[in-house]
Length: 120
Image (cartoon, rainbow, N blue to C red; front, side, top):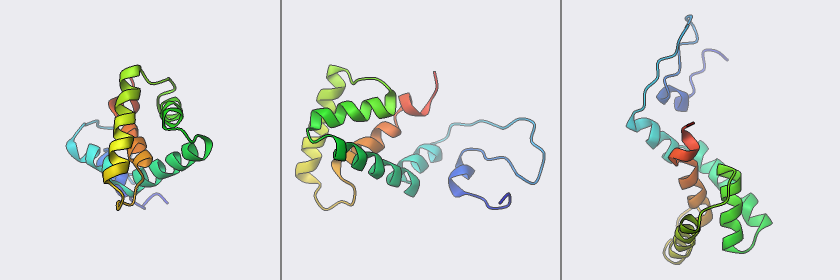
């Protein structure tokens, strides 16, 4: 429906669907990053990606490589892989009551990274 306003699109300069728009305005503001990080859509997609990766790979190193292939279409560097390993092990030990798994949180972080969000 053209008159249904989707809240996530509002943050990203959605044009008015009832008026002609020959050129969209562009902006980069903090609410956009916060919307991507905290939206229900982002959490759901991150959880689904993590579930798919966890179902296919049992070892954390294989999961990290698979997430990087899915999100960035490249393997992680040695430094990135080490950081992700520390993140998964640190979060798994301390964050057992949260609703998102450590792998889902890693997926959310990668989906919110500059490399994924912006086209160079």
